[in-house]
Length: 126
Image 1: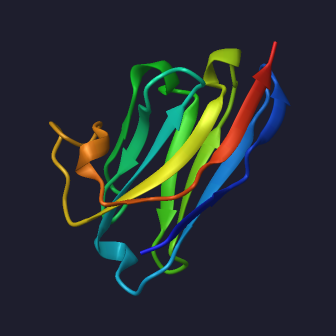
Image 2: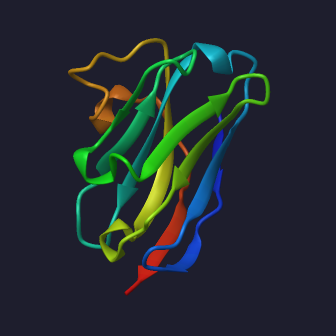
């Protein structure tokens, strides 16, 4: 499985971006998906996750109400709509996939995911 994230860029605080993650493979609908981000000098941080059918979504507290994760299984795509961006949202955003289910105990951890994309840079200026 290959993942390719896109849609990052430079935006002013309060602005919006929509990230996309294109996934190869025929069984995308069986993958649990997530977005992580990593700022310079910091550990990779969980941002949001979505289950197979898209009916269940999970967010880190700092993005709740501002970010929305979604997926289109017919197009093998996952998205992250980011609104009301803040400078602390700056980082390299990576999409991740697991063939199968994750659990609420592990979905926020990097070790839960089998596949990673290279990421797309998001920079929010103040």
